[in-house]
Picture 1: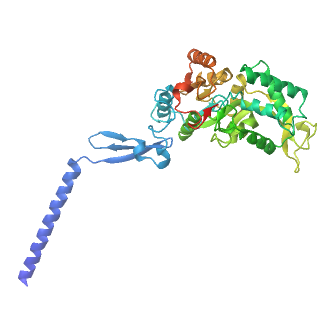
Picture 2 (picture 1 turned 60 degrees about the horizontal axis):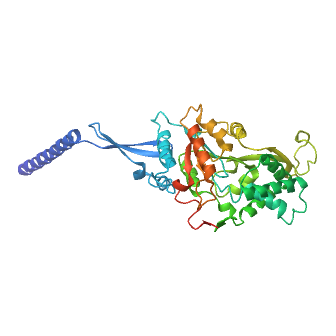
Picture 3 (picture 1 turned 90 degrees about the vertical axis):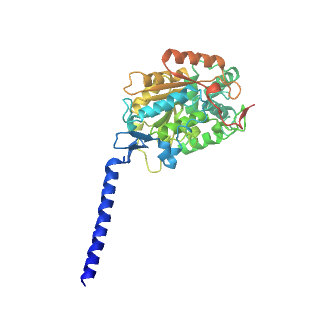
Amino acid sequence: MEKKKKKADLCWKIISGVLAAALITVSCLYFFVPRTVETVTESSGTSQVSTSTESGNTSKVSTSEVSSPEQSEVKQSDVLSLWTDKAPLKAELTAYINTITDKDSKDFIPVENRIAVFDMDGTLCCETDPGYFDHKLLYHRVTEDPDYKNKASDEEKATAEIIKTYFETGVYPSGLDVAHGKAVASAFKGMTLDEFDTYVKNYRNQPAEGYNNMTNGEAFYKPMLQVIDYLQANDFKVYIISGTDRLITRGLAEGTVNIPLSQMIGSDESLVASNQGDKDGLDYTFAKDDKVITGGEFLIKNLKMNKVSVIEQEIGQQPVLCFGNSSGDAAMANFTINNNKYKSGAYMLCCDDLERENGNKEKADKMRESCKENGYTAISMKNDWTTIYGDNVTRK
């Protein structure tokens, strides 16, 4: 019995010794081997993993190494892939996004203040085939539409003739902005908004006159659509601020430009109730059997200072980025980059591609000079884009 007791005591001593040695080993490792700690920080929808040791060394793992599938779509190596490596916008915009989305940067912009505005014709889509989409639409309505051409007014026909001359010469005549706006309002008077939208979309599905393998509605610049996607991936709210009629803008851009209709702003015509007649809106109450229809009155052409006014009225914030292509966008660009409390920028397209697009070298050179004078960044359609409409689209 005594032998068994001594043997048991010996076993416990051995076990205790082993446990003590193991504890000492673990303690040594804890105090003398650097430990790695991972912390995840989030900034505007992106994440960084900081790996630190007790020696004070810290390294950051790029977002592409830890990003979700959605985030991986906007890796630095992939964004703006339709832009050449030498394109000024590509370097500037990616650097800008990296700065203004970094919460530790002095140039950080809160998400709610990330506003970008884009002109449409000549900035997002083709402007010269042989003219603006909304001008082609009106010309079709007044001179070609079998259901309307015999009903067109003398004023509408006269405006259509001016538009025809513009198409043939490429020279935009003074006064056409207002005349065209009035003719659009009267030529489409009495349509419900659904009927007007259907009309616009039917016409946008017609072949683009000067191109092979493209419709009017497909004539959007793919590199510019990529810019919108990139901005939205970094929490920007994007608006179209167009001189084209608001309803036509929506009908043309919907389904191609990935923003809500409420963020598509253009020139305006009156809207009334279907049973309103000649009564003023203050004297009429919308009834249960009413529909909203076009009222036939042209209200405002959304160009130049009017673009600044509509931004203040409908957005209520100063944009931090602006994209345009003409003198009609200069006021909007100046409004964006001057007296802005946030880091801002303006970009202007130069229509210098004479092979893939109906370019105009003289107009492009003039815009390039304007960019130098006003602090905008020029975009060369010829040199900055690897494609415009897609490789299968060619000029006739």
